Image 1 (cartoon, rainbow, N blue to C red):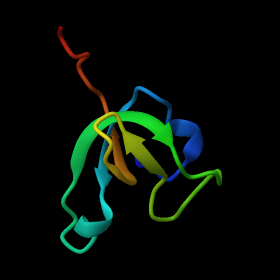
Image 2: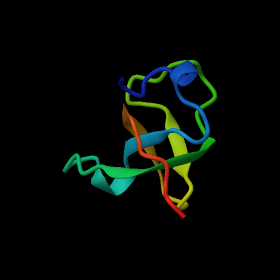
Image 3: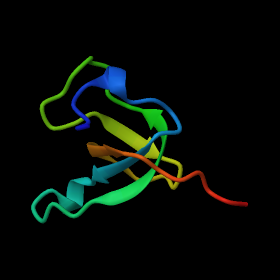
Image 4: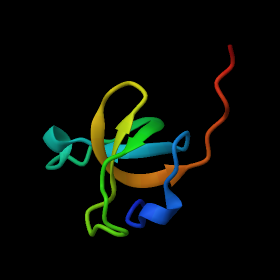
Amino acid sequence: MNGKNRSQIRTGLCVDIIQKQDQRSGKTTRGIVRDILTRSPTHPHGIKVRLVSGQVGRVSLIIPCEPEKE
């Protein structure tokens, strides 16, 4: 699933994001969603989120994740 619809994104999902500084290269960062920052229901470049790690970017892909083992 792509990350253009806010209704598909929830806290705790595993996603790939593209950070602002990586937009030209297309480099993605994988993480768990902590906050959804975009308020509109859709966005053509992806919904902006903050990851648990604190990184902010637009969702490029929603991926199935293994739960982290403690």
